Image (cartoon, rainbow, N blue to C red; front, side, top):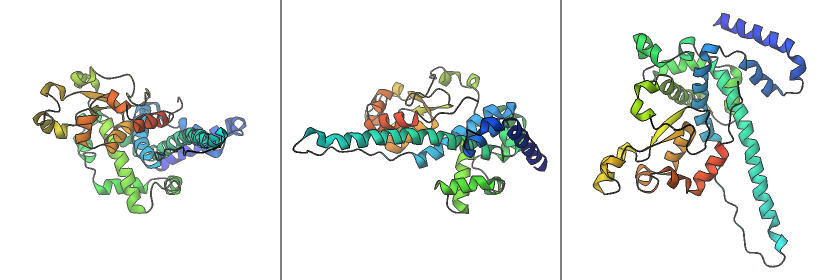
Length: 299
């Protein structure tokens, strides 16, 4: 751990010296992101992308703007009486665009801070690694052992815990454990998933990008348009036929979580069993427009 900290300190000092003139126009938050970009090892880059996506899902859920609708009231008199309402809507949309950009930077910063504090075996976790190492597979078998989560929390940088608290993502030590555990579970699930060649029937339908927000730079998960938990009920009640049950849509984790948040399994099976039906909902359209702006800069 000490050697890694020394290496990190040396890199930071060197880059600060060499690139100082360029950083004068950047704030400390952006500078931190740029410096850490150089610290992600090449053989860990793909793992970092999975970790960042896992973290972003949780952060976006907590910090996404609430769905609000500005209602126009009937006003007698001059037409320009309704202009403040229109302006307030435009202002709200502009603020949400800015919030999405700031959130992207915050997620990038937070993902790098936490990822670099993880042990090497976790930063390089993969399907092949757990197949070849029984002890490693057992250690990161789900659900995670609480003592493992506690160890990971202990090694978080103080700046990370402060940032989480400032943004209202955590409160006490218990909620910090729960916050990190959820992210690690999502990351381990993604990192140890079987590669495409092991699941050809599913991968054959894979889309190029998320079918809701259209972001094409994120890992995708398949969403069962008719949730498996209600397959038997769907057939028994005549909602769907047997051959329709395995329809899937390819969604990023944030959109996947959002879909399950807005409707029950029964509602998804009966009323939202296609991408077209999902995108016909106003709240889904608003969500897609907002989350689609949360993007990562090229590394």
